[in-house]
View 1 (tube, rainbow, N blue to C red):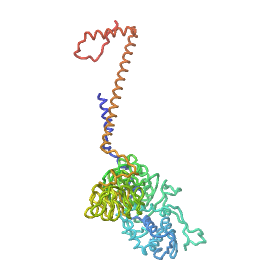
View 2 (view 1 turned 180 degrees about the vertical axis):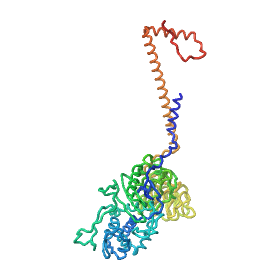
View 3 (view 1 turned 180 degrees about the horizontal axis):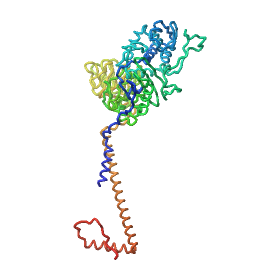
View 4 (view 1 turned 135 degrees about the vertical axis):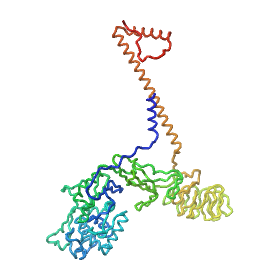
Length: 609
């Protein structure tokens, strides 16, 4: 019985929802030699690993990622850039250059290739002057754009990244900048190129370079012929100055994850540090599509208020299809904790009403937007944009449940009687303006229909019974005209939203042409669930009892067969065994006295001498 009880208890505990075990720990174990670094998932912004990621360092030429992003967002790629004397010569000696000279004219596209592949400082200066007039004005634009991306520890003083004590950034900020840059297809196309040829350069005459002056990408991790090649790497930027040390930004994609690795103040280990961080990210984390796992927020029941909007029955919500979370491979989706927020960020879609932020421990791991997919009651009421589906068009054709057109055409109803103001108080008697009432509802002075029994007009002219007009003059309850003079079926307004207690026109607020969905109350569902659990537990108990009984019978049969075998071994037949057992049973039945103490060892009733 103890085993049976334990089995039933275990099943009951499994059937009742309980708090899950603690989520697996966030992976660790990666180390880098650089002073600062980070690896971040690009789609969600989840930081997988960071070392001094919010400490400021000099960025060197990885600055040009932000420069290129601003130029692409501000210019047409075919605009002509003229290189000034200051743009060409106001650079540090022996710094990176593409050989462009004063007076050269290149397109913005050519300048961007020189900027991102050859890391040309003269190109950075010329592009800054082309966009903002001066490098200083462009630096202000850089700081504004960085702040808009959420950068909090950066300040940029020039477009190239050359040494300046007021020019610094953090690994986290550079990851945010790269995250924005790789969302721009033009940036990715240029930055991921291995080579390019610059035309029309004084120092590269056509006679010597008929196809243009060749330049090559300095980044090694997507060069298959280089030892630093990394499978999946597709974009990034190198950097170096005497003060900044080695800096490197690398973007790599495998499967559903795109990672951004940033190294600051590296010590000739920037490629190995980057590889270590990327391997750590791809090896220990997974990206999950939220809409394939989350079901909590896709249906809200009666009279729920969301962002000030109240639903008659059910609000249809959709989760953003592209949203994901990034969690350890050893974890499940349920280990991420959702937090509903009505504060929307600047990236929220126009039909978003809330967002769900997910955390894993204290670590943000992703978010999704709740999108308003469709609004209406369970009876399917709600108005389409063109006034179809039972609503009344602006031309004045009839809708169901007594809706009235702007031109005074009739709603449905009968049994008319005149209210004191000449409007119909009881269904379909003509009002003073020739329009009909509907469903026992008096008509307001503004021509909108009342709804409800014995509905005389309120002092403001609207019907006192469930017929108060909405701010746009339409009736808030059934049979009210929408703002465009077209009524929804069962009186829903143009927005499709119905106030608490709304509905009308017919009992239940439904229309003849709409389907009705069946909803099981939550308390009934809970009772059914408990009943089902008890039925399953009962079935298990019965099955266990049957199993125990059959096992006992089988063991008794085995004991009998063993006794017969022993008797046959000492010369007794089966018939003799049966006779002896019968004598034994009859003798013990007639002269049985309860034993004082049961002996653990059972003696055979006879033994052959």
